Image (cartoon, rainbow, N blue to C red; front, side, top):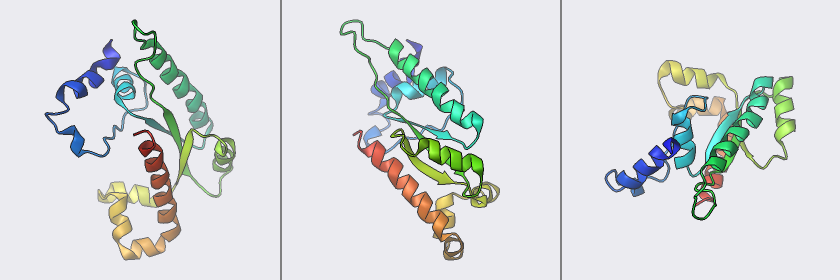
Length: 171
């Protein structure tokens, strides 16, 4: 079962890396469903995938759900006939703008969807983080930047808190 390699690795080497020292381990993967991503899905406590406000982003939700469901459905314990893994799949609305029809449609389509756990607003600051090689949280610590973008940072903090709460509920 090639999709179980990472899961087995954590079982075999967790004590060597003192895995209990970590509250969270994040895997930021390429948006495909190759063997690496299948291993991450199996090893993860939860999968969080972005939804972007465009037709391709919305269609990706159903495609990702189908792929995860198919993978987990293949990993059945032959003795018990029960799934080995039950990794929940969540989504975040990402790059949402207040003034575009696509963003408004995405918010409307996902407002009652329990799998959608947060919304991340689009902001030029994200591009600045790349140019300056600074995490967004470092920019948030700068009083001048924070004050000029207070509402954005409050929305971002709320989105992160929602994601954290959902993952913590799984423990």
